[in-house]
Amino acid sequence: MAAHARTRAVVGLALVAAVTAGCAGSGSHSGSGPTKTAPPASSARGGNGRPTPAPTESNPPGDIPDNQVYVGFRPSAGFAGFTVKVPEGWARTDQGNETVFTDKLNTVKITTATASAAPTVGSVTNTVVPQLKSQVPKFADPKVTEVTRHAGRVVLLTYQGDSAKDPVTGKVVRDAFERYAFYRSGHEVDLTLSGPVNADNVDPWRIISDSFTWR
Image 1 (cartoon, rainbow, N blue to C red):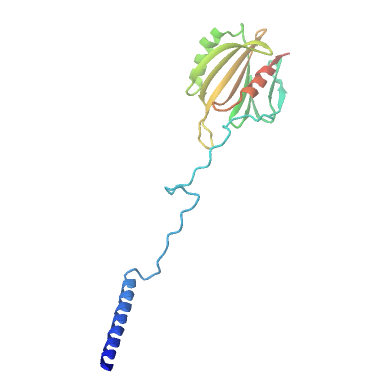
Image 2: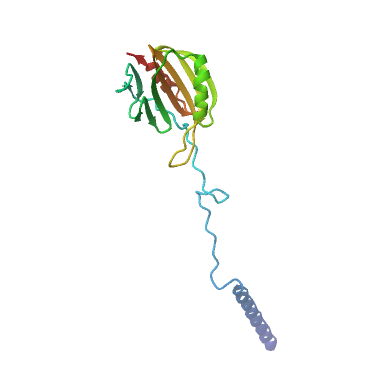
């Protein structure tokens, strides 16, 4: 009986040694270093590994704030027989008979000229529209009408076109234009208001165009 017990003990030890050797052997095939776990995907990236885009702005670009302050403008040179309100704080550029006020994506342009007759829907359609078509990139959707402003009946030309390329970002904005032609006693003043087509500037443009007054 003692001999059988010793035999079983020897067999048991041999089995333990074999299992231990097998485990050691399987570990040697996995490489010499410890197993590495892939880091979790960053929460700032989408499922395809690309950065998650920033959320879309709730307000379209180009909106003029409701609390914008307006100040009177009267040219200091050339024909100065009028005043018009322009947004306070906008950058101003003067060149000849043209004054331009800009802020971000919006522009107010005031141009004076001598004219033998008052502009009409027909004259603007036949003369001004072809000129702008050759000057404004992707000029489109011209519409000429007569409207009433504080100064009286004026000719309004609305259209769309591409802005100049931004020198920093290289972006081009699709703009909507309102061009008002005011006339009195051989003098014409063209007031052009422009901004992105998706901007809600109906009220600011009305404030500016309705503020035009002959002196």
